[in-house]
Length: 244
Image (cartoon, one colour):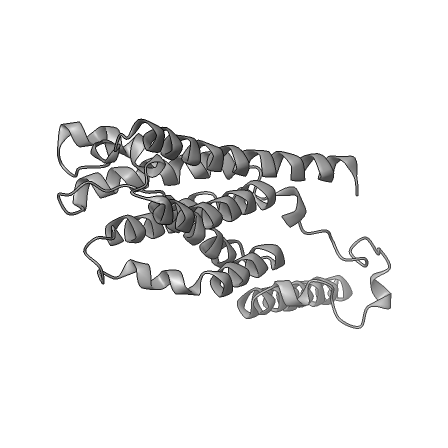
Protein backbone atom coordinates (compact mmCIF):
# COMPACT_ATOMS: atom_id res chain seq x y z
CA UNK A 1 0.00 0.00 0.00
CA UNK A 2 1.43 3.43 -0.94
CA UNK A 3 2.52 5.58 2.00
CA UNK A 4 0.16 8.37 0.97
CA UNK A 5 -2.87 6.03 0.93
CA UNK A 6 -1.90 4.53 4.28
CA UNK A 7 -1.59 7.99 5.78
CA UNK A 8 -4.98 8.99 4.37
CA UNK A 9 -6.61 5.92 5.92
CA UNK A 10 -5.02 6.75 9.27
CA UNK A 11 -6.24 10.35 9.07
CA UNK A 12 -9.73 9.13 8.15
CA UNK A 13 -9.92 6.81 11.15
CA UNK A 14 -8.51 9.55 13.36
CA UNK A 15 -11.08 12.11 12.21
CA UNK A 16 -14.05 9.75 12.60
CA UNK A 17 -12.68 8.41 15.89
CA UNK A 18 -12.27 11.87 17.41
CA UNK A 19 -15.89 12.68 16.53
CA UNK A 20 -17.14 9.53 18.25
CA UNK A 21 -14.82 10.02 21.22
CA UNK A 22 -16.28 13.48 21.72
CA UNK A 23 -19.84 12.12 21.75
CA UNK A 24 -18.97 9.43 24.26
CA UNK A 25 -16.99 11.80 26.47
CA UNK A 26 -19.99 14.12 26.84
CA UNK A 27 -22.25 11.18 27.70
CA UNK A 28 -19.80 9.72 30.23
CA UNK A 29 -19.38 13.08 31.94
CA UNK A 30 -23.14 13.39 32.25
CA UNK A 31 -23.41 9.83 33.61
CA UNK A 32 -20.64 10.31 36.19
CA UNK A 33 -21.90 13.67 37.42
CA UNK A 34 -25.54 12.64 37.29
CA UNK A 35 -26.38 15.64 35.13
CA UNK A 36 -28.75 15.65 32.18
CA UNK A 37 -27.69 17.94 29.38
CA UNK A 38 -31.02 17.73 27.59
CA UNK A 39 -31.70 21.42 28.25
CA UNK A 40 -28.79 22.16 25.91
CA UNK A 41 -30.74 20.70 23.02
CA UNK A 42 -32.36 22.74 20.27
CA UNK A 43 -35.56 24.42 21.45
CA UNK A 44 -37.20 25.86 18.34
CA UNK A 45 -37.82 29.60 18.01
CA UNK A 46 -36.51 30.41 21.47
CA UNK A 47 -33.32 32.49 21.79
CA UNK A 48 -32.07 30.20 24.57
CA UNK A 49 -32.52 27.25 22.24
CA UNK A 50 -30.03 28.60 19.69
CA UNK A 51 -27.12 27.13 21.65
CA UNK A 52 -28.51 23.72 20.76
CA UNK A 53 -27.45 24.18 17.14
CA UNK A 54 -23.91 23.51 18.40
CA UNK A 55 -24.55 21.32 21.44
CA UNK A 56 -27.59 19.19 20.53
CA UNK A 57 -25.76 16.64 18.31
CA UNK A 58 -23.37 15.98 21.18
CA UNK A 59 -26.11 15.07 23.67
CA UNK A 60 -27.98 11.76 23.90
CA UNK A 61 -30.79 10.71 26.17
CA UNK A 62 -29.42 7.28 27.12
CA UNK A 63 -26.89 4.64 26.16
CA UNK A 64 -29.19 3.05 23.57
CA UNK A 65 -29.65 6.42 21.88
CA UNK A 66 -25.89 6.97 21.80
CA UNK A 67 -25.14 3.48 20.47
CA UNK A 68 -27.72 3.78 17.69
CA UNK A 69 -26.00 6.94 16.41
CA UNK A 70 -22.35 6.05 17.04
CA UNK A 71 -21.78 3.40 14.36
CA UNK A 72 -23.43 5.21 11.41
CA UNK A 73 -21.84 8.48 12.53
CA UNK A 74 -18.39 6.85 12.53
CA UNK A 75 -18.91 5.11 9.18
CA UNK A 76 -20.36 8.09 7.34
CA UNK A 77 -17.85 10.65 8.62
CA UNK A 78 -15.13 8.20 7.57
CA UNK A 79 -16.68 7.75 4.12
CA UNK A 80 -16.86 11.45 3.29
CA UNK A 81 -13.39 12.12 4.73
CA UNK A 82 -11.80 9.26 2.78
CA UNK A 83 -13.63 9.53 -0.55
CA UNK A 84 -14.33 13.28 -0.65
CA UNK A 85 -11.29 14.81 1.09
CA UNK A 86 -11.54 18.17 -0.72
CA UNK A 87 -15.02 18.88 0.62
CA UNK A 88 -15.20 16.67 3.72
CA UNK A 89 -14.65 19.35 6.38
CA UNK A 90 -16.78 22.14 4.83
CA UNK A 91 -19.53 19.61 4.03
CA UNK A 92 -19.54 18.30 7.60
CA UNK A 93 -19.69 21.82 9.06
CA UNK A 94 -22.49 22.93 6.73
CA UNK A 95 -24.56 19.82 7.45
CA UNK A 96 -23.98 20.20 11.19
CA UNK A 97 -24.91 23.90 11.38
CA UNK A 98 -27.66 24.12 8.77
CA UNK A 99 -29.51 21.07 10.08
CA UNK A 100 -29.61 22.51 13.59
CA UNK A 101 -30.64 25.94 12.37
CA UNK A 102 -33.55 24.64 10.26
CA UNK A 103 -34.69 22.46 13.18
CA UNK A 104 -34.65 25.59 15.34
CA UNK A 105 -36.79 27.42 12.76
CA UNK A 106 -39.43 24.80 11.97
CA UNK A 107 -39.49 21.87 14.41
CA UNK A 108 -41.91 21.18 17.27
CA UNK A 109 -41.36 23.22 20.46
CA UNK A 110 -39.53 20.52 22.42
CA UNK A 111 -35.86 19.90 23.15
CA UNK A 112 -34.25 18.12 20.19
CA UNK A 113 -31.06 16.20 21.01
CA UNK A 114 -28.82 13.61 19.36
CA UNK A 115 -26.55 13.28 16.34
CA UNK A 116 -29.15 11.58 14.14
CA UNK A 117 -29.87 14.77 12.21
CA UNK A 118 -26.21 15.00 11.22
CA UNK A 119 -26.20 11.27 10.41
CA UNK A 120 -29.11 11.73 8.01
CA UNK A 121 -27.33 14.72 6.49
CA UNK A 122 -24.16 12.71 5.87
CA UNK A 123 -26.16 9.77 4.51
CA UNK A 124 -28.06 12.04 2.14
CA UNK A 125 -24.84 13.76 1.07
CA UNK A 126 -23.22 10.47 0.03
CA UNK A 127 -26.39 9.27 -1.71
CA UNK A 128 -27.00 12.42 -3.74
CA UNK A 129 -23.33 12.96 -4.54
CA UNK A 130 -23.71 9.81 -6.63
CA UNK A 131 -26.66 11.36 -8.43
CA UNK A 132 -25.05 14.76 -9.00
CA UNK A 133 -21.48 13.68 -9.78
CA UNK A 134 -22.38 10.64 -11.92
CA UNK A 135 -19.03 8.89 -11.78
CA UNK A 136 -18.37 5.27 -10.92
CA UNK A 137 -17.02 5.92 -7.43
CA UNK A 138 -19.84 8.18 -6.25
CA UNK A 139 -22.53 5.93 -7.74
CA UNK A 140 -21.03 2.86 -6.05
CA UNK A 141 -20.94 4.67 -2.70
CA UNK A 142 -24.53 5.82 -3.15
CA UNK A 143 -25.68 2.27 -3.82
CA UNK A 144 -23.71 0.95 -0.85
CA UNK A 145 -25.21 3.39 1.67
CA UNK A 146 -28.67 2.85 0.22
CA UNK A 147 -28.37 -0.89 0.86
CA UNK A 148 -26.77 -0.53 4.30
CA UNK A 149 -29.09 2.16 5.62
CA UNK A 150 -32.32 1.57 3.70
CA UNK A 151 -34.19 1.23 7.00
CA UNK A 152 -33.31 4.81 7.87
CA UNK A 153 -35.93 6.11 5.45
CA UNK A 154 -38.61 5.26 8.01
CA UNK A 155 -37.01 7.81 10.32
CA UNK A 156 -38.20 10.58 8.01
CA UNK A 157 -41.81 9.88 9.00
CA UNK A 158 -43.51 11.15 12.19
CA UNK A 159 -44.15 7.66 13.54
CA UNK A 160 -42.93 8.26 17.09
CA UNK A 161 -43.44 11.54 18.92
CA UNK A 162 -40.42 10.81 21.13
CA UNK A 163 -38.12 10.77 18.08
CA UNK A 164 -37.06 14.00 16.40
CA UNK A 165 -38.15 13.05 12.90
CA UNK A 166 -37.77 16.74 12.01
CA UNK A 167 -34.02 16.47 12.60
CA UNK A 168 -33.93 13.44 10.32
CA UNK A 169 -35.95 15.12 7.57
CA UNK A 170 -34.16 18.47 7.67
CA UNK A 171 -30.78 16.75 7.92
CA UNK A 172 -31.58 14.73 4.79
CA UNK A 173 -32.66 17.87 2.90
CA UNK A 174 -29.52 19.73 3.97
CA UNK A 175 -27.41 16.78 2.80
CA UNK A 176 -28.99 17.06 -0.66
CA UNK A 177 -28.27 20.80 -0.74
CA UNK A 178 -24.63 20.37 0.34
CA UNK A 179 -24.09 17.58 -2.21
CA UNK A 180 -25.39 19.92 -4.92
CA UNK A 181 -23.22 22.83 -3.72
CA UNK A 182 -20.03 20.76 -3.88
CA UNK A 183 -20.85 18.65 -6.95
CA UNK A 184 -18.31 20.61 -9.02
CA UNK A 185 -15.45 20.01 -6.58
CA UNK A 186 -13.90 17.08 -8.40
CA UNK A 187 -11.62 14.80 -6.40
CA UNK A 188 -8.33 13.59 -7.88
CA UNK A 189 -9.61 10.05 -8.41
CA UNK A 190 -12.67 11.40 -10.24
CA UNK A 191 -10.67 13.12 -13.00
CA UNK A 192 -11.34 11.35 -16.27
CA UNK A 193 -8.23 10.29 -18.16
CA UNK A 194 -8.35 10.70 -21.96
CA UNK A 195 -8.82 7.45 -23.91
CA UNK A 196 -5.76 5.75 -25.34
CA UNK A 197 -6.56 6.89 -28.87
CA UNK A 198 -7.08 10.55 -27.94
CA UNK A 199 -3.55 11.57 -28.93
CA UNK A 200 -3.50 9.53 -32.14
CA UNK A 201 -2.89 12.07 -34.89
CA UNK A 202 -3.36 9.57 -37.71
CA UNK A 203 -7.06 10.27 -38.31
CA UNK A 204 -7.16 8.09 -41.42
CA UNK A 205 -6.95 4.96 -39.24
CA UNK A 206 -10.37 5.69 -37.74
CA UNK A 207 -13.52 4.48 -39.45
CA UNK A 208 -15.62 7.19 -37.75
CA UNK A 209 -14.64 10.65 -36.50
CA UNK A 210 -13.30 10.40 -32.95
CA UNK A 211 -15.71 13.01 -31.63
CA UNK A 212 -18.84 11.60 -33.25
CA UNK A 213 -20.42 10.49 -29.96
CA UNK A 214 -19.55 13.70 -28.11
CA UNK A 215 -21.63 15.91 -30.40
CA UNK A 216 -25.37 16.38 -30.58
CA UNK A 217 -27.38 15.73 -33.73
CA UNK A 218 -27.86 19.45 -34.17
CA UNK A 219 -24.11 20.13 -33.98
CA UNK A 220 -23.42 17.46 -36.61
CA UNK A 221 -26.11 18.92 -38.92
CA UNK A 222 -24.67 22.41 -38.55
CA UNK A 223 -21.19 21.13 -39.40
CA UNK A 224 -22.59 19.31 -42.44
CA UNK A 225 -24.34 22.47 -43.65
CA UNK A 226 -21.16 24.50 -43.19
CA UNK A 227 -19.18 21.91 -45.15
CA UNK A 228 -21.72 21.97 -47.98
CA UNK A 229 -21.61 25.77 -48.02
CA UNK A 230 -17.80 25.72 -48.24
CA UNK A 231 -17.96 23.28 -51.16
CA UNK A 232 -20.51 25.45 -52.99
CA UNK A 233 -18.33 28.52 -52.52
CA UNK A 234 -15.30 26.58 -53.77
CA UNK A 235 -17.18 25.41 -56.88
CA UNK A 236 -18.39 28.96 -57.58
CA UNK A 237 -14.85 30.35 -57.36
CA UNK A 238 -13.59 27.59 -59.66
CA UNK A 239 -16.28 28.37 -62.26
CA UNK A 240 -15.35 32.07 -62.19
CA UNK A 241 -11.72 31.21 -62.68
CA UNK A 242 -12.55 29.08 -65.73
CA UNK A 243 -14.59 31.90 -67.27
CA UNK A 244 -11.84 34.45 -66.80
